[in-house]
Length: 128
Image (cartoon, one colour):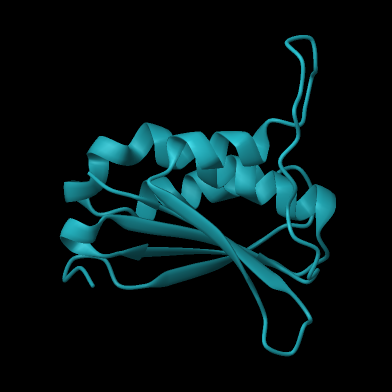
């Protein structure tokens, strides 16, 4: 855990403005020594927030956890236990790339289903 940034969480609106709220939350909460990952973090946090709103169930929450030299962990929780699916999309497709972006641009990612089966957390780790 980073001494500068404690684990922080915010509830996101259950509409497409969730992406904007997630980016704003990240900009105000991410510690200074993780700024090298800021661009990737903004994109991935937005994608995870939109996926939670479009394919999950409310409530939707976003969590930021700085692990110091281990990087930053971004997580979005929603009320659905349905896991995200990677899609093969063509160059003309207007959507469907979110999970692929998380896979390619993060150093590690995964999905944790709640023990009670009432929701899931999609998370990714970005190392500086």
